[in-house]
Image (cartoon, rainbow, N blue to C red; front, top):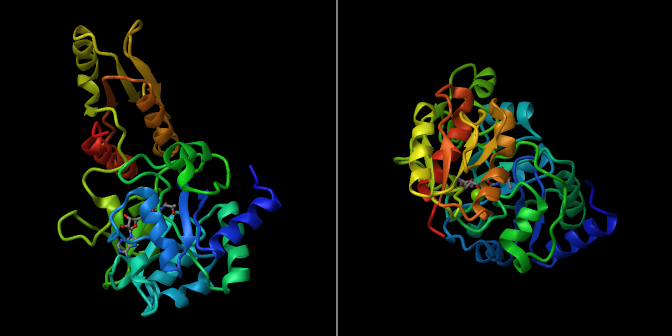
Length: 331
Ligand code: TXA
Ligand code: MG
């Protein structure tokens, strides 16, 4: 799916005018604004219903723009960029003094990422061609605050409707969960949010296992709030060996559940809406948010999600499931 020439032109015009544009990235869709324009960035918070002290990621077209936004960039950050950009990795770096508080939530750091999606990159290049070669687009996930991140243009329209004047359609997002965030602003790199780029990938570059932030004492990251990425239907994580009993008990109560599982239904004839997702983490991540969103629309009493293996390769999706369960049912 490639936007027409006229869509790119309109997108650049809107960004220049301080308006919002939703754009595809390889992780999830973003809600973008000119990152150097505080009034434009304020519109992102209004459209999402997000607290204004939550910092945003600035998307840039390439490594050349890094020094415009960040200072004292450590060697280790350059090495991570070399390996993983364009791609699903956000680096937290000391910000340049000029970077608006609206973007950083008043912190002394800025999150930077070169997205690995041709439409996002094309838009960033065209925007930089008119707004200055290092221009950036601030963009959180294009969902209402606390809700499931959108992985298609239709999801964005469903979340934000009239609140966003233009949605560039780049098809379904390849990765399907938000970028890995690594804080390189205070010495040793620390993983703030797990993602497709795993500690094993990072270790290959760093030469040692990266530290993983615990929620206590971590910097403000809305992706690190306990309740996040949540459907409006209540949601429960259920261990595989308990799932059948759990579902039978629900049926006896007369409740119809949605089920998300990497396995086939254990029994024929169950009334529940069964969503089987790929039994490996990459495919599972790709399909997860769309499946949650579908089940959320099905007017079910509960979404039961089969808990995933403890193996580190599942850590990023398990993280999203845990947070979704914590925030579910509040709509
Ligand atoms: O994959 C992604 O990262 C997507 C796409 C659109 O790029 N964006 C995304 O944005 O997930 P958002 O705002 O939903 O999550 C970005 C996270 C937030 O949890 C925010 O708090 C954190 O990045 N963040 C941004 N700047 C930060 C900073 N200076 N220090 C700590 N955390 C920061
Ligand atoms: Mg988000």
